[in-house]
Each structure stands twice: as structure tokens, then as C-alpha cells.
Image (cartoon, rainbow, N blue to C red; front, side, top):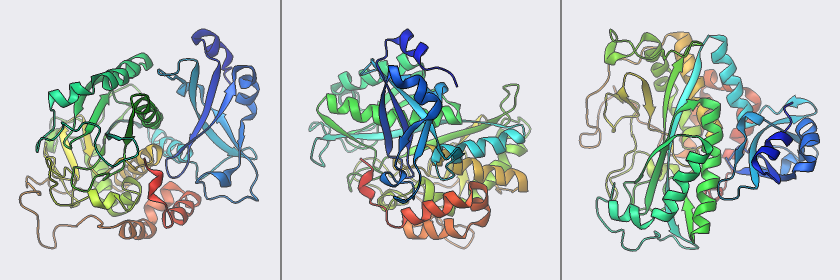
Amino acid sequence: MHDLVPFAAAHGIRHFLFSFCDLFGVQRAKLVPVAAAADLAESGAGFAGFAAWLAMTPADPDVLAIPDPASLMVLPWQPQVAWVATNLEVEGVALEQSPRWVLQRQLQRAEALGLHFRTGVEPEFFLLEDGADAIADGRDRQSKPCYDQLALMRHYPLIAELLDGLELLGWGPYQADHEDANGQFEINWTFADALVTADRHAFFRVMVAAIAERHGWRASFRPKPLTDLTGNGAHLHASLWDAQGRNLFPDPQGPSGLSPLAHHFLGGLLEHAPALCAITNPIANSYERLARRTPSSGASWSPGWISYGGNNRTHMVRLPDSQRLELRLPDGAANPYLLQAAVLAAGLDGIERQLDPGPRSERNTEADPPVGSDWRALPSSLEEALAAFEADGRLRAALGEPFCQAYLALARRRDQEVVP
């Protein structure tokens, strides 16, 4: 195990946050002094599993959180503290329902096929008044507020602090904008290997919340925090690469410029879409965003049917170019690790079974909603999505039955307020 102490000495670190995401995406952590870090890096920081959303009981042994040094990040807003993602074990064995382990298992499946999963994520968030469901900027009132320069710049101190922090972390942030709802924002950074993206996604949510508090606001990633405004998406851009660093999705001779491998991966996403919604849209509030009417600001920007198109944002999967697929299902409540794991599991099934996604659609489904049996609607409620997940034997087998049973048991009694 790599010693954390040299990292602490090089960066002036006094404490480490040994962190993990539970099944609901809530980050749990212990603050570890540098003097104790070397020992705990080997033995793990102990947690009572029942105290987090891990589907455990008070009778279960301790969960030990073993840090992964590759994930180390200095907190830009608190530079004497470093965050590190951990892998969870119980009595020396990986905790099967741990979200990071669920993703790692899928990455191992892909690597056995010579494939490396690379992703980027677009987590949208609102800035709200602390203690109230009102946007943080009373002057942000446009009916089409997306890209509003003045509203963006009124929050320049906060947005600039986030961008500067991501640059210090080396994520390669390249743009920030005011999004389609009043009070809504998005920051984009460079795509990476899926585990790195998942760690960053988890860290980003905490970073935004912490820095928003410093500026006197509350950040919300809830799918639909305000009923009359556009919801928070977390669109996922995905591609598969070989060991030599070559993107395997482009093919100039293929339909839409995509390779057969990319089409089979897409076929898997379409095949498993109803079950995927249980992961990508995991709370009741998710279905206030998904496939709903146009809000008072902008558009809904969320799909209603299981379909794909070209550079067309009204479909579940968009093909912005030949390099990647964009899955537009996920929302701000999605667990950063389970999101990646479920998408990869569905795509690998499509590859293994050589599923055909069929021809792409050029339809504008928002202005011209489809009718007829040729179109499959996405689930309209969490109950419907969970039933689809429970019935999807192939996806469950890929993700692992211990995880699936734990997830279903908790999801059916989930308190959606765990999403800020």
C-alpha cells in the first residue's frame, strides 16, 4: 500500500478524509490525522455499516475503508485537508454492495475484453437561498435564461472559485455556464477513465456544496428542485478504448460514423433502458424531471422514449459526433459510481450479444411526440423503474445479486431528501 505520509509532506496536509459513497450517493468519511494515516492506510478506517445506506445491520462486522491513493485530492477550499476515495471491505473481503466496488467489477469485465471505459459527466446544479426553495439571484428572471451572461457573472466569485479549484486539481475544466433554468449552472471538465470520472463526480458534489455555503447559498443537485423550472441532469458521455489508447467508437464507414462495437454498446443501452432508470433516475423526484412537460423556463431537455438520434437533444441517446455517445437519462440524484457501472454493464451486454439498436431517429420528440407500438416509453415513476430493474435478469447478473438485493431493498423505502 502506498504511504500517504509523503503526499502529506509534499502538499502541507494535516488531515485526510477517508471517504466512500453509500448506495444513496451520500458521502461518508472519517477525518484521519497524518500521524495515523500510514497505519490506517493498511488496516482501513472502521465504520459501522448500519449507520450508512449499505443495507447492513447492527450485528454485522465493521466495514473497513481502505484508501486508494490514486484518488487523492487536496481540498481547494481547505488545502490542509486531502480527500481520498476508499474501497470497502468486511473481514478482508470486498463489500459486494459498495458502489465503488460495483463499478470496479464492471471495469474488470471490460478489461477482460480488452476494453477501457472512458466517460465525462455534466452535473447541473441550482444555487438557492439557504433555508428556502428560492433561487439565489432575484434578478435572474428571463424566460430563456440559458447562457445569460449577466446572471452568470453575478455569481462570478463562486463560479470562478470552482473553476480555479478544478484547475488546481488538474481536471482540465474548460467552461462554465448559466443553464436552462433560472438559478441553474453547469461546469464541464475533461473526460477520463470511468473510475476517475466517478471519483471526481463524487468529489465535485461535495465541493460545490461546500463552496456555495461559504458564499451564503445552498447548492442543489436534486432532479427537480423547483417544480416550474428545468431539472438537473447529469448527462454521461461514454466511449470505449483499447490498451493502446485508441478510441474504438469512430468508424468513417459505419452508420453515423460509428463502429459496430459502438452500435452494439448503444443497443445494450436501449435494451436495458427501463431497468437503467432505477439507477440513473433513482428517486421519486426524478420522475418530475423525466419526460415531463416544458417548464416555464427553457425546455425540459429530458427524454421520454427509448430512442436515439444524431445531434438531437430530444432523444435518450444523442450522437454529438463519432467519438462518443451521450446518455441523457441521468439526473442529479444518480450515484456517481452506480451510474457508470450500470451504463457499462448494459453496454457490455449489448456487445456480448451483438444487439442492434436499429436506425436512428430524426424526429423532434418534444415538438412531435411519437405514437404507436414502435416506440417504447421510459418509466413514468420510480416504482415502474424498480420493477423493470427487478425483472432484468441479465443486468442484475452483471451487477451482482448481493448489490441488486441491497439496492432494491433500500430504494423502495428511500427518503428522497438525502439528495440536497
